[in-house]
Amino acid sequence: MILTLVLLFVVGYLAIALEHPIKVDKTASALLLGMLMWIVYSLGADSILPAINPEALKAYVDKAGLHGESLHMQCLEYIVNIEIIEHLGEITETLFFLIGAMTIVELIDVHGGFKVITDNISSRNKRKLLWIISFTTFVLSAVLDNLTTTIVMIMLLRKLVRSKHDRWLYAGMIVIAANTGGAWSPIGDVTTIMLWVKGNVTAMALILYVLIPSLIAMIIPLIMLSSSLKGEHPVMQQPKDEVDPTSPRERMSLFVLGITGLIFVPVFKTLTHLPPFIGMLLVLGIMWVFTECLYNGKMLDKAKEHRLPRVISRIDMPSILFFLGILMAVAVLQATGILSTMASWLDANVHNIYIINVLLGLLSSIVDNVPLVAAAMGMYPVADAASTGYLANFVVDGTFWEFLSYCAGVGGSVLIIGSAAGVIAMGIERINFGWYLRRISVPALIGYLAGAAVYFIESEFIKPLLG
Image 1 (spheres, rainbow, N blue to C red):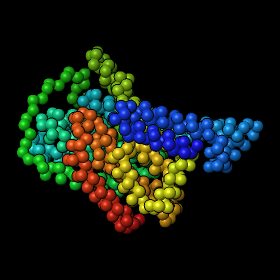
Image 2: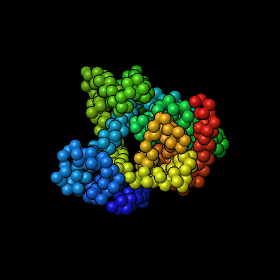
Image 3: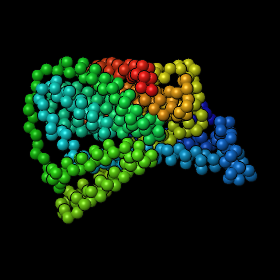
């Protein structure tokens, strides 16, 4: 039965990775995979559970008074009432956090709040513009998610850059900047959100030790790509803005309120020690009340479109369902002991957290980094704070978790299909896979490895001095 689960996961993983060739949405594959794995696990529970977790099963049977039931029914009751509930509780923390964050970002966007940034970028110099756009993307993606940042910046490109191939080069650099910017922020990427929400890393540790490697991973390809740009872009005629029910002052207020709220969430967790999704939904509630007060008395039809009940219908629910499916599938691998077995194999045969993470990062350029990080979190539980030696790498803010955040976030830039930012850029600008491979992949890879080397130096030589 264990072999069946492994084969099922591999097939499902391939379906997710080959989403475009097989023309089946990865969300459909992930949901099907997650549910099928729990079904298969429940059918073979009596041959798996007593072998991997006999003490917990016995304690549950004693507490629930199930001694008169068959072994299969005892195991099934344990799975339904203990394992599914526990894993689903952890997963929904991440999902509610994402729903709140995506709704806030969408609310800012539909009100034109991001014009505060994009309207102030007007340089025509090709090289200077690339640097401005890259650093703006790097900073924005640390506060927003890298997918939304990529969309905002590519839409800006269409107002500034006429040449298709110049736009492709800028878009490729935006992908790198969005992924590197998201890697050092607890709310900048789905993978860092997962690690932060579960308590594997803290916001301060990410900023202290992952920021500089991420910055290096962006600057090196930026230098390489900007060296080929010369001259200035021709001025493009801008279309007139549509009539909006909000004034510039109201748009600015909503932008400031939303960005401040997103930045406040890590502070909220530090002060209250409550799960981050509570802080995120608190901010969403405040913004909901603010917009309701804003539109009271406004009779414009468009005002209805800008109210939060309409805005929330625009968030990317397929992505939420994708995370649900893949995290449920990984939960089965964790519950059945498959991930712990894989961790033991890696420890025995590789036994180097730097090599393991660099390989995971490169693998994330081929397959989605969300299940990779979820699998790594399942393989290596957070170690006790008093742990020493090799296990010390897995404590909260341990080297493994910090480096995983960097590698999983930045490694996806090596191929255009390796990150959500790359996929959306590919879709909007119709960038060829082969063109990205020839022009962007090598600079992205060099930047990724250089940033990894910087983190190695930080971890091995600087962090011990700081205690």
